Image (tube, rainbow, N blue to C red; front, side):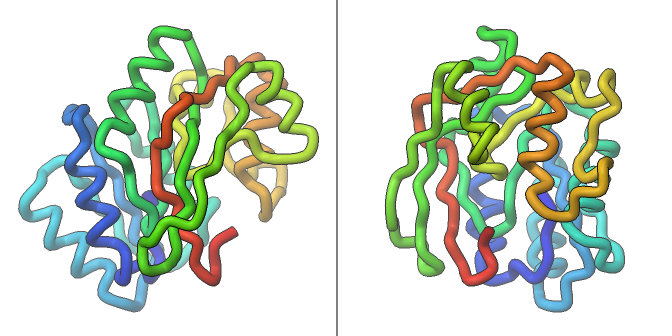
Length: 203
């Protein structure tokens, strides 16, 4: 999870990850040069939960942070998260089980859009059939980026990372296309996985 000046929402976000029904995970938090109280919040939780691994340094941007997280991760599966969003309690367990059962390389799911105050705005449904997911790559993104779980071995064996072909924007869609070209198997769960917070700088 990359963090840049997310102090307003960070505590709720971290709590939602630590309360997951699947408990065996490492929680990599990359403090990307925050100038607010983000680092203080991260360190507070790190003292009470040793699953949190905090990397803090000067600001290097989202793409660098995402790739740094991939490179440092030790797990077989990597779950994306944004610092202003909220996980549903069974997110990791449901995704992990679904990916194992269906031999997926990347998996997302439905999600709820919330406002800055955390109030629901709308529920969004993502395509479920692999053919529909692949069709959506042509004009849209088939996953909410912070909802995805990716098999790390697929990225490593195909030498794939965010932005390696020079894309500074839509870095997620670029990676999904590259994964498809490398033969990745895609899937989406039919349940909401995260609450996606829409703030002024949300993409």
